[in-house]
Structures are given as C-alpha cells and as structure tokens.
Length: 334
Image (tube, rainbow, N blue to C red):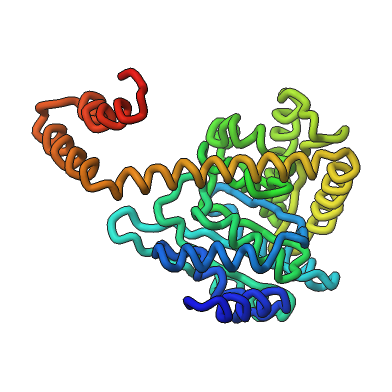
C-alpha cells in the first residue's frame, strides 16, 4: 500500500461501494504488520464515519443453523432492496492459527447476490467471538453504504457478549431444546440478547420449537427490565430459516426496537459507550504490545517463564518479578 494517493484511492473506492476496494480495505485493517496498521488508520480516517447502518450481532449454539438463517434472512432483506454485509468470524486453530473460512460456501445464494457482501475473518484466538478488528470492518461496510450489517460470532459462550459492544441489536439463535438448553446458555448472554430466535421451527421439530420458545419467553420475564428496552422486549420468537417462516416478523421487531432506541436517545448513547469501550481496548492492547516489544522486559519474561516451567516459581510470583521493575519505573508500589 504505502502512499497517501493509494490510501485516498482505496478510500474513494470504499465510499463508491466498490466490492474489491472494500475487500482489500478489510484485509488491510486485519493485518498485524506495523506498516499496514499505519495505513489502516489513515484509511479509516479517510473514509469517515458519516453513515450508519443497522448493526446486528448474531450468536448461536453449534448446529443451530446460523449460516442457513443468515442466508435466508439476508436474501429477504436484499429482496426488499436493502444492501446487506455479513461479517462472519471463524474460529482459528490454537495449534496452527489457521481457519477454514467456509462461510461463503455455506451461503451460496447470498454470496452471489449483488446487494450482499460476505466476508469471513479468522478469530486469531481472540476471545469474545469476534475478530480483534471486526469493529473496523464494520465501519468500512458502513462507509460503503450497506444498510444492514450482520456480525456472526464464532459460537455461543460466556465470552460471546463482546459482539454486543459493536452491534445495535444482539440476536441469539437457538435450536429446539436438547433438555439442558436453558442451563447451557448462561445468564450473561441471555441478559445481552434483544431477540431470542428459536430456529428449525418446521416439520417434526415445530411443536418442540414452540415449547422451547415459551421456556425462553418465561426466562426473559424473570430478568430485570432494561432501560434501553420498550415494553415487550427482549422477546423470544420461533423462526424457520429453511422455510423462511417468521423472518419477516423478526425483522419487523428489529426495526421497531431500533426505531424506539433512536427516538429515545438510546441508540446514540450506546454508540458513544461502544466507542469509549473500544478506545480503552486499543489503549490496553497497545500498552501490552509496547511492553512485549521492550527488550529488557522480554528478557525478564523469558527468564521468568523458565522458572515457571521448572517449578521454581509460581506463575503469580514470576509475573510479579516481571512487572516489579515497571512498577518502580512508574512510581507505583509493588
């Protein structure tokens, strides 16, 4: 990349909804190289933040049919004339660091829709179900003029709530029960959900899906009412991605909630809080990188790690040894 002219041309391509320019831009912001990072920051500044899409975070248990749902839901939205971007995060191997990135093959029809854009990204072992630079990819998709951005997380878990820090609405997708579903989906993620959609409400599973939906509706009523919700939210609904049943109702509820939050000032407040959150995260990550790049600290860490491996010191004591000189440098007591 490199030159100011290159960055300006790429930014102009993004603002003109050039899909190739958008793909190249997301690749740039996801890069871990220091020179690419400088270019990425310049690019994000050049595209600006004037446009706002409806950001929908989507998480769900394994096997729930997230890809089928996104394809059916996305096709419904593009059929209404909306432009839809899908940012799908695939888990990275803890051993090799690789990811399958097969989301486009699972959403074949949506991938060929001219009003849709699908971008799979590796999680790179980042906790929270989203990639570290997912929020910047979201900003680029907004700059490209997409109306709806679907952010699909790795999979359901206690850490998956991080996606709520970059979405306007958080949708939890579940399958008809496997007995322990209410226990399996913990309170943390339940409290973050704006809509719970019980998928696969078709065929023989329809009665079970209805019962599961009723169970979740009851569970939601036990949670404390949130200030950012109108009456009736959060709520649980049944949908069938396979038969495209219930998708319109789900979309109507999403629009209703988003419109209410805009009118009540909740939308802007949430976006401001999210911006503050990611600012703090970037500062924390930057400080950690500076720390690890310091030769003296790296040497102390290597020695401390050897002590931990051989059992001469506990991890906590070894960490204190590494941080001690830094605390003295900053004038802080141990």
